[in-house]
Image (tube, rainbow, N blue to C red; front, side, top):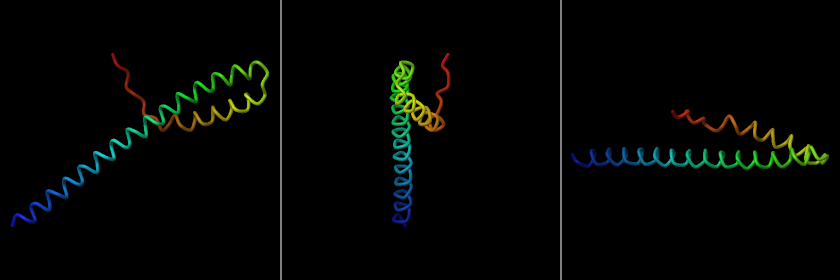
Length: 83
């Protein structure tokens, strides 16, 4: 009689562990996106400066960078404001 109970408990443990692992992986992925977004914002600032100085290539890269930023922003959760 204890074997089915132990098996059920083990399945519950596996399910819980899998959810914990999924949550950790989701957190890592969100952090990767946040880091990429930060890099893109820094790159964009440099590209815009170069563009204003007359570098047409920088202007084109700035447009591409803005598009990538626009694609990433919806995938990064917004933190609630703290009081």
